[in-house]
Amino acid sequence: MNANLVAIFLSRHAGHEAKPALIWNGETVCTFGELPARIGQYRAALIALGVKRGDRVMVKAENSPHFALTYLAVLAVGATFVPLNPAYTPSEVALLVEDADPVLLVHSSATAVPPAQDGIARATLEADGSGSLSQLAAQLAPDLAVEAMAETDLAAILFTSGTTGRPKGAMLMHRNLSSNVAALHEAWRFSDADSILHTLPLFHAHGLFVALHLGLYSAATVHLLGRFDAAKVVALLPTVSVFMGVPTFYTRLLDRADFTREITANIRLFVCGSAPLLPSVFTAFEERTGQRILERYGMTEAVMITSNRYEQDGRIAGTVGYPLPGVELRVVGGEGRQELPPGEVGEVEIRGPNLCAGYWRRPEATAEAIGPDGFFVTGDTGFRDASGRLTIAGRSKDLIISGGFNIYPAELEMVLADVEGVTDVAIIGVPHPDFGEAVVALVTAAQPDMDPAVIEAVAAEKLARFKQPKAIRIVPEFPRNAMGKVLKADLRKAYANLFTA
Ligand code: AMP
View 1 (tube, rainbow, N blue to C red):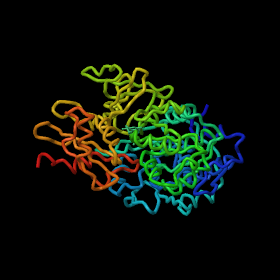
View 2: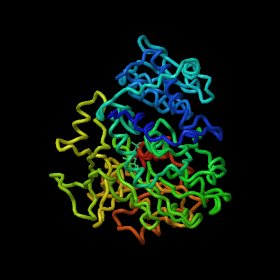
View 3: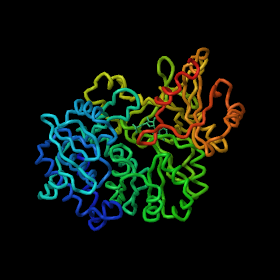
View 4: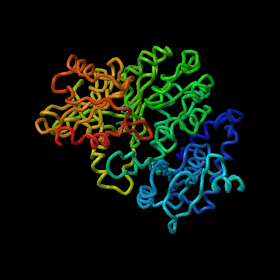
């Protein structure tokens, strides 16, 4: 059997030929019946530009249907798709080009790229279809072949967000992607009756491998937008059945008076992930809509790892649920990295068909991350309850050690975010002459003149003394990356001299 993900998708569309596969800004791009020919035209264009099986194609562009078709065509050729965040600067792109060694760099005119290099073809991809790749595809007869691939052949290399250090390319195999979408399809009860409102960036695993893949695998229509726009989302929600987002999408929806229970009456599933969802947002969402957000946990290297249960009462605030079918998860600690009992915080490790083959051309980084027994060190800390349900405590590098005590930022963030008037909290550790590190709470508030003493009082009441912040600062906003993750390294740098100046 052909393990090419595109072959798997196309094999599931029989009987849905007349149904829209992709809708872009309200207009049908193609039906499921037309999809093979649209992919086939892009496949022909890629081949005309010299792309062959096993080559890498780098794409740096904003969301568009042409982006999605290019992705599928790269896989159909048997090449490896390498998406880049459009926000990368030319010098960042130059490093990644050198690392990934692509034969073709496809980019939009709005994104910056380094000067052309010998041996790397160029093409443009614009959201309105005017790019050279789309123009070429439109002139060519569709090449309907889908290269036969093995399960362990590479499908994509995604550079991890790399908020610190040099980005590493996670090598995703066809098997990683097909097993994960099948697990999500079942866990989240997808069917051909669904339609998905997709506003996540396609260059990231969440937008590409979760939202887009679920539509293609389920023969469910995907309504794609260029980016999250709260007003557009409110207008479109009554026409779809599923919405996927990152926590900031949900807070922005809740900020709007026109985001109501009626607007969401059609939706059977709101999914959230990529960053922790505050219980206060989960609760406010339930109060407003009568629905619970289903939180899941994943990462570029392993796509989706855990999920809350589908049933409304299986969706619990502050936890990320249970490993997906086929995924093994353990929480380890201590010198021997032994498995810890329920309730104890340690490092989260995983193994399964979702786990990538390692880091592109970085054997040492791969050996550091994936142990001899095949378990991958996620870099996240957390604990499981007696039933195995996982709660994330934070990134292990965000762990704060103050006066010899371990402090997990996520725990403090959840407690302080519950304080009346507080909208969000970021906890960091900064150098301190007595304690080694000191806890600093950075807080965004509904009123910018909020008195930090109110937060201090709650901290004193609810948190052990060693966990209480040594400083609280009300700030207008946090620096975040494209997926809404707070850039803690930037915050640590900004507050590095608070106690040591
Ligand atoms: P990325 O590779 O960009 O998808 O980032 C993966 C990281 O995002 C994980 O290692 C976690 O630190 C974080 N993350 C993803 N989902 C969640 C979640 N539901 N709660 C807390 N952190 C999350």
